[in-house]
Image (cartoon, rainbow, N blue to C red):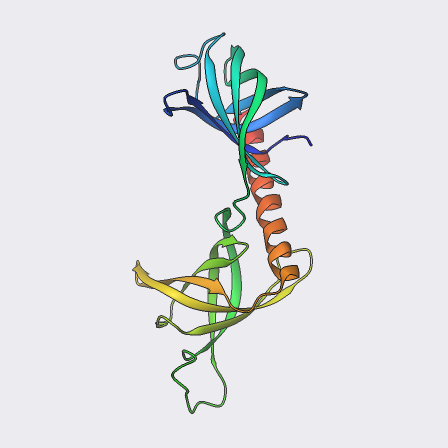
Length: 210
């Protein structure tokens, strides 16, 4: 399964991060990586390295490899030998700036007499398959429930989130939230969105670097 546009890190055998970027080409046991800084000072032909690839389909894969060539910001690695593979669905998230409307209700253990939850304009700052960070102008307490319609996915999703962390940023509230009672279809759709958006952002950065 090809790794094109998947995020990638190249480390020394000691674990030191040498370069990071994304996979530009993948064929058999070789990959060409476009890195975010000039790699010539850190990598040289014949170096033995460890490569971490965040695959859109297979999770985080770690390989032993050797540097075949370094040309500007392009590093070609060959002889990939898999060390391990870890599916990190919950940890993978992508930054966003998506406006949404939240319906804010009191925490589940604090019933309120209000007939309708408050409606708040907000911006989704990042998304994972199991939660989001949201910024709004309104004070919201930990434990509050948020309902929203998230339309950035292929299929719009009606989500319920619980606020687990709150911190202040330039007078606004930034809410760390987890999904509540989400179906497998919902988490699959969010995970697909995260990976597709990550790929899109990498492609935009790559185009801007040319």
